[in-house]
Image (cartoon, rainbow, N blue to C red):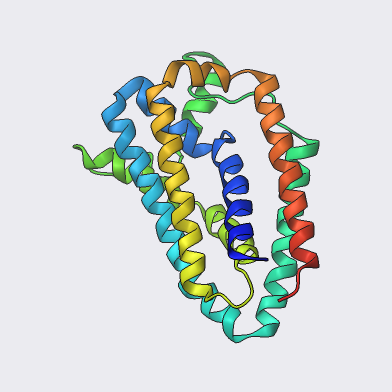
Length: 227
């Protein structure tokens, strides 16, 4: 795989992943709708700084190990392929039919959703002031181990043979952050229409199924790849 092919493939995959509704999208949209665009921007910045920190951890930790050990590379390759296929199958076979941005007051369902929001990583225990929203976004990302697992499974397969593993892997995470910044900015600028769109069952189901199919494809590609 050439560098150009690697970057194009990664950009397509990571862009699709970024626009698929998840915790980060919910946090940015909810903050923009209830606390204003400034605080939403701070939360988005915290989220993307968290991604960059996960990328650095994977690049300098797993990158060195992969470069030095053929056994570690093989084990991680198969584990990553299995994880991506499992994740893709879940999204493909069991797509969500809704995406809740906030909870309606009253009722058991509303109480459960409010309780879940209060337990969200970074939702409490952060100082006040303008830094509060940045730290909320940062902690919601850093305290989510799924981000690290995904990076370890996903990033190494886009490193072309012969390229330095550590800087290239970190560069891929930086590309993800750049895409994330653009997406978060779009969310903040178009909070109401995008929020309405992401509540439509057919949109959420379609995004889940498309992303799931892509993940399965990359998982198979990873399993068949050679160093």
